Length: 178
Image (cartoon, rainbow, N blue to C red):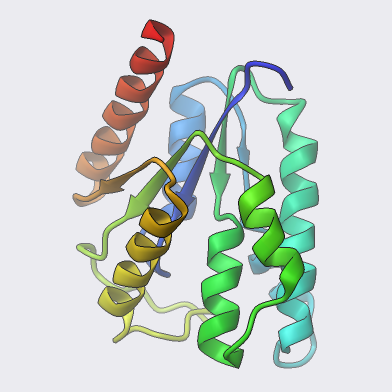
């Protein structure tokens, strides 16, 4: 969609990405792309495998394309291809070329990198409660190496949301000035 601004919400698990995507979408009167992995893994009757990460990446991409037509100027994406890259590299020591290619092709205008300053919440799908800082640093390194525009989002509860919202407003104002 021409003129559509895409904002990816990324970072380690249990940092409020899904909550933030939903709340930002409501605040900006638009839609968000939910995390495809959550439903995909819920439907498996087995442990996930490396091939599943590729299917999740493809499903996330297709869902994002579907939601683009429903967005009103801005689309918030609850996760993106860096998540599947880091997940695959950490778990299997390699990453499918499709994912690596999509990181370069499927561009976002801004990434909101969620900080690990909020408490860990247990979830059946979460695997690394003691590695959140490690993963945060990895995400930050990847975002820098790709040269992607990003802002770190910190704070608890409503404060976290307001920090994210202010960064989006600042981004949109800077975009209008260009």
